Length: 418
Image (tube, rainbow, N blue to C red; front, top):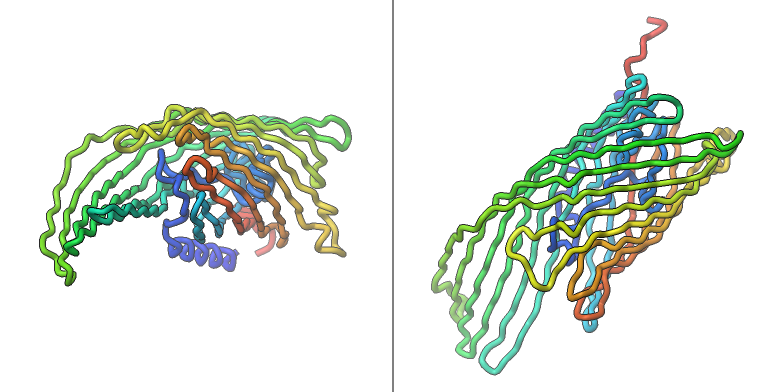
């Protein structure tokens, strides 16, 4: 147990050192940024499917799964993303490594408790544009970075072998910075630079409720179902804006530097309500095939600052299809027979509408669950596409590699021999 705690502490320290620049998507400018996947890597490898509870694997998407645990469980995960961006005329590449979750689950008889930390959303983008005219050359740059994290605490209760319910309480916090820079190069070689900086500090609470139900169809087959619901929540913002004007001579000497702070009103922004329904069929410790539908009221989203005429929001739908296969979970002679093989597909209408184009995201997932006694290493691979290069927009083709550690141990067990 001491060794596992040391590993856990080391992982935590390394995660903190990764920082928070965990997206490069230009679409993260809008709303609350790029909303991150909130589950563990085993669920992600099945397209985001999470319709069962596990006795040794901590699930984070449905709080009703906490009371299914039989072992005290530590879970931590991260993802490296490799993205190609393309428009009608240009191409760029980016790579980011992100922290996905850090959580602890505790079994307490028919009750279960879990708590942890994970990102809710992230902002990280940089766009540049150059306009040349007979009078001057203008360089425009917009960039942003920041995050909204959430600390959560949840509990669940198992009524019988078929039904469990649970809830999560989460506190969201973070800050997002957006910079807009315009540089004018005139024929007299004097440069005029204007920098507008907008900063939002956000905080607020949210809730998530869940239910899991399963029943035997026959001696082998089991029907699984899940439901989660998160009501609409509001985050308070503390907004600030500053504008600086800088003039440089041809030699690079700074001639003036004026900064003006502008008072702008604070507003509440919305975390939209979300409803997920999932169903599946499988054989315990052998295989599972399931699907899940998620409906999010993104139409109620608003921007943190001034509204834009080029952006709109619509209600979104996410579809996931996936499952797993275990050749022989209790094999002693062949390790590969105990590996969990996972695959899945996802399709999502993100709810973001730009220039009358609905931004969609879809991908294929594959993964392996590598058993280490009662612990496990989960590996996941995802190929996907977001957005479109038509109508002056940006298409993202991404490849994600995810790693999750699930460390299990027995606590509060009375010694039989001193």
